[in-house]
Length: 103
Image 1 (cartoon, rainbow, N blue to C red):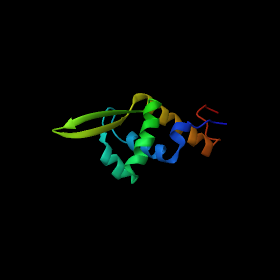
Image 2: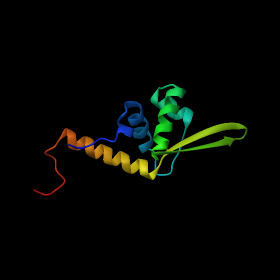
Image 3: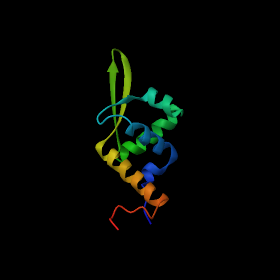
Image 4: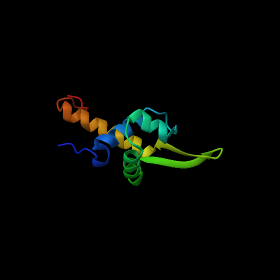
């Protein structure tokens, strides 16, 4: 049976990674915009981003725009690869007869 990445599999983290995967490679999104898109609290988002960051799946940059602190989030290369593998594993679970190997 195919194993699903437990870091990504939690519903909120899956939503975070799926949203970040729509950005171009290297593109970043502000924390408030990500929070708005996901419709979750700042505290909840922070907890899930920390788990994803600890796994190396997201990169978080804290900077300033003028005098305003800004937190920018992006999917790391490792995170993008993990999400691609996760989606392949989901597809395999949903349709085990769909094999990538030629018949």
